[in-house]
Length: 211
Image (cartoon, rainbow, N blue to C red; front, top):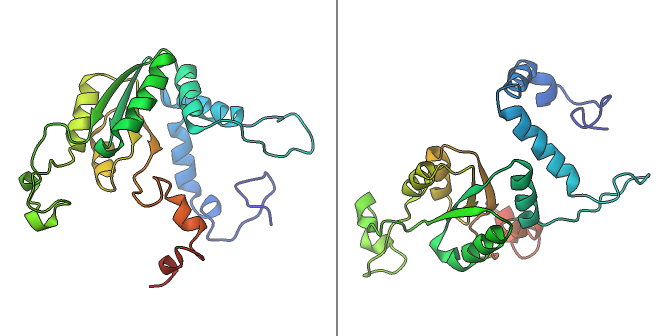
């Protein structure tokens, strides 16, 4: 059965959101007519198509050709962005430096802020010594709210989230004013590729399938 949301004459069960949430669908579609939103959405879809080769060949076979960093550069260029904000994890300073260098070589100004900005001790938010990574030592708290406020003040055109921890990323998204994309998320075990645990959930990460 072809999914109702994938093809014009597709079918779906009664609980399918495309059939069940028609009022919400109409309400949401009106948002795409808001100033700036329609062009952003249009450019995102154009970028999506540009990531595949041989689209004019029939029968069509999907051939992806671009990495996330290439997409980031192309999309930002299509949108006419000049100043990019970057909120990065302090543990990924090296990676943030590489990404900043690449973006700058493509003509972008990068405003980058580490999660440890401010050097505020974790005790400030009630973290106990035995709850730290290194017990008995000073540890600066991650400060995503300040990261967001600094980028807001810099009036960035577009923001990039790089490797923020679970929860810290949520606070950043709550307080950032501009649109944001995620370049990478934190996963200390899989080299920041959380999908690896899903792909191997019946082999190496079989314990995830057990309560």
